[in-house]
Image (cartoon, rainbow, N blue to C red; front, side):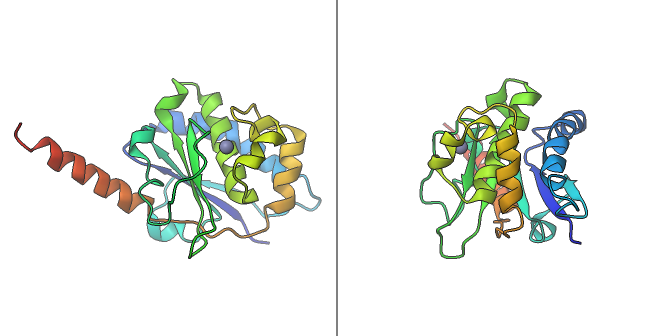
Length: 193
Ligand SMILES: [Zn+2]
């Protein structure tokens, strides 16, 4: 039985180890609930992996980038981004149709004003957009699917369980885009006024 691996990519050191542990403690039970809603479970294990890079994340089932704020969106810097759902103030999901059919999600850390519960809800919300392959219409589904959402309800878990076996190829260019973004910012600041 395969694992389901979520690559949690912290860009710009915007979450420290303590915050990562706190967030994982909040989201793990929700993803485990998806897996355990079937008997036997759908996957051997739900992996929450904070140590990914672009090459290892290529094997992940879901990639979630954490960026300091929306002005540092890596998804907006993706060559596959042609505008999208902007009703999510705290996150964004890149999803097909695109030529290469890749998806990815990002979460804006500063939009949560330090609330790890709100950030955990955003992680689950963007994961739903990604895995369910749905844009704005998802927001009428309620619970964590709403915008703004609440903690996941039983329907959210059931809906994710129904679709979680469907492989969504993930865009792993976020690390490179973030690096470029910061190189640009550094060179801008060196321009004399
Ligand atoms: Zn949304």
